[in-house]
Length: 473
Image (cartoon, rainbow, N blue to C red; front, side):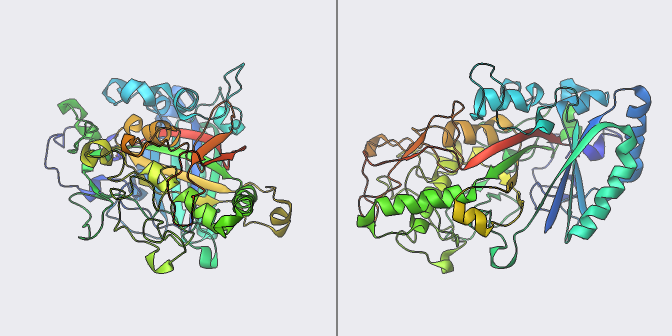
């Protein structure tokens, strides 16, 4: 989080110093999620006149720096700030010192990334993004920075948001807000499709302890933080003049609308069409996700839910090369193949360096009876997805483009099967139907059937916007 050193001496830290993580040098939410029941993202565009820029810099020093939450600080209301490439330029900082990412993903911006790499729906004639909200498409007011505020209740959240708006509003040409909150009652911790979320957040070497029986793998600090050691080629090294960047990170923010009644209807209808399975829609949903709604993984509970396994991590896919329990196309297997991507593959080099720290939050109202009855979404709801990594092209972008959108990933020649798309978040830019294999098993236990294809004629997760930001310390 390079913000702490933006406005003070840049000669106080050695970019090649100890690999131990200094929690006071890392913005909150990056490796320790901010405590959140409610969360606001305030997206801001700076005025360009010198007086406004200088006034903004002074306000950061006087009003925001003292209350930015580090990974070591825990308070009721917590704040962090992230800058875009355009925002860094407007502030007059040395953009040549900022890692722009492989293929310039950070400097090119999120719209280019969405069209060229992520598969977001586009008009095939104009190549314009079709589903994004107008605020994210604004060509006049670039999003220069984001302030993230979390709080234990909505009243305190709005109070803190108003304080920040009052402090900085005069220096802005435009701003807008996205807010989310945890779901109520028994759905606490679950996203709107009903599945327990954020179970498989990777642990970081030197920071987290990993239980002996856990098989999720542990990543090195450099996968998430700039200037820290890593393996697999994803570590972003820093020159001496970039010491002020150490322990910074890059954030990918995604507003994802979830079509909940359509997804549930699809699962229910798919179960009815395959009566020989004697299965429910929840079983089909579990096959699409790779976990039951409780969080129990199919690899340990293939035929029925077992809530006692809701946060289980003591599994991988080395013994599932023929998809006996969890399909290749299941969301959690596509987005984190663990050790089961290729026979003999080294996950330390091929999988772990591409994982991210994810700290999103649901947004929008609960499902209504009218929506359930009509099987049609009427209210906007979904997930404000946030991912942190030291290299966007090796983290968020790769997972979406090379893993979830790729019908041949994970590759397994020995099994002679192709997985298909991730039916949950996989995207096809031209809107073609999305297919996945073996979601419907030959028998309830899940035998491989390369010809058993499930087709979804519509997406169930719709991207409404994307923002790439550097987390400045």
